[in-house]
Amino acid sequence: MDLDALRSARQGEWDRLDTLAAHRRLSGRDSDELVLRYQDGAADLSAITTTAGSVALGDRLSVSLSRARMRFTGTGRNVLSQLPAFFLLQLPAALYRVRWWTFWIALGSAVIAVAYGTWSANSPQVQAAMGSDADLKQLVNNDFVNYYSENPAASFTSQVWTNNAFIAAQCIAFGILGVYVPYILLQNAMNIGLTGGILIGYGHADTFFLYIAPHGLLELTSVFVAGAAGMRVFWAWIAPGPRTRLQALAEDGRAMFIIAVGLTISLFVSGIIEGFVTPSPLPWPVKIGIGALALTAFLLYMVVVGGRAHRLGETGDLDPFAAGARRIIAD
Image 1 (cartoon, rainbow, N blue to C red):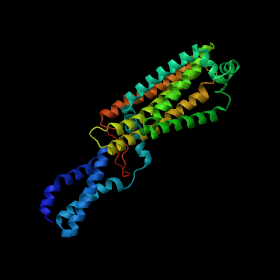
Image 2: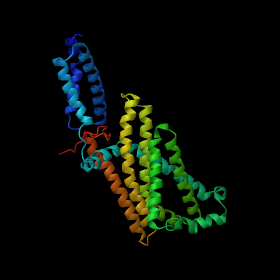
Image 3: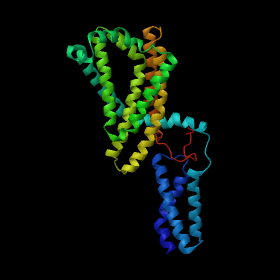
Image 4: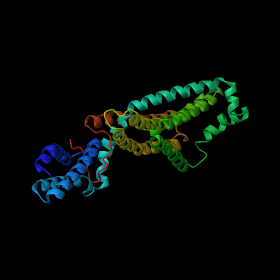
């Protein structure tokens, strides 16, 4: 083997490996590149040692590989020390990436819900198909309101949180299929519209909105974000841009996993509101104000904090290395 020729051909790649290994912080894309550079460098070192034995070029490359290896096999950091970076950078940046998907999904869901609500409120045929007059009166006069108070608040909160978090996780996990997320979102919008239309048709519009608004503002937004995350993964497969499809899926999949973790928190908050605030004797302006405050905080976190993280260069990717490739931005 001509070592000089190998050095000339590979020097740029080895220098790039050193540069990546020396970075204080790595994005998901840089992390993927570091793995590839490491694998190529290991193959080069194997060829050098097989044909030439122990030589200076091989020793130099071995040092570079050792430094790179420390990025993903070094001593792990305390998990608690990584929480600030997660909540101030990774999670808001990941949410920021799906802000427009979330907007359009929310708008589309609202249009569908209003359409089905108008239809069911004004169509005796639709109302008859949903149940007898006695059944619908039982729904609007008792069942709809009692649903929020028939179980202890703590167990009801746990139930709705678990159910909503499971739906959100499904939207993200099966988003790559392309059809699952639109199906779930369509069913959700239809059910809200039909139920609201029945209550409105029977003269209980106030009941519907007053019992949906406190928790529904944050809960529905979280579901829309989950749908947006799922569709973002699907779109990464359909239109990866300059990336390969596998690379696009890896990068966007990591960011969407971060969103899934974050949504368990927002859905927990909406579950607490649904279990403790919605059925409470508090004045309705206070209840709706609590829901509006929770939604405002979520949107500010998504857009303002997320925008700041994005401008700092955060992509929302999960760094796959356990050796502390994430660092807290010090500025």
